[in-house]
Length: 48
Image 1 (cartoon, one colour):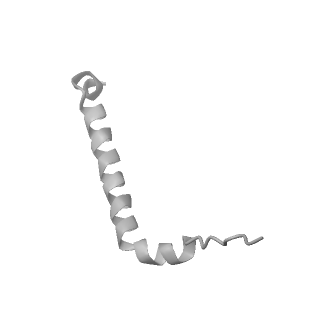
Image 2: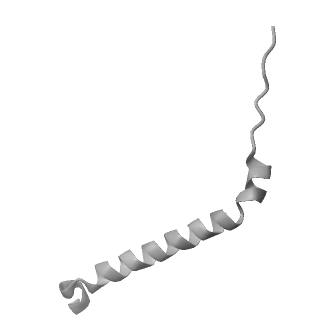
């Protein structure tokens, strides 16, 4: 409870969130090209 009174619990949870967010961003940058191949959407034109 003492940590909550001082505000350390909130500060540490914010740091954990920022760390996870940075990690996921790093992974998305590293795997950008393979994921573009998987999730690329080729639009088909409709001709009448």
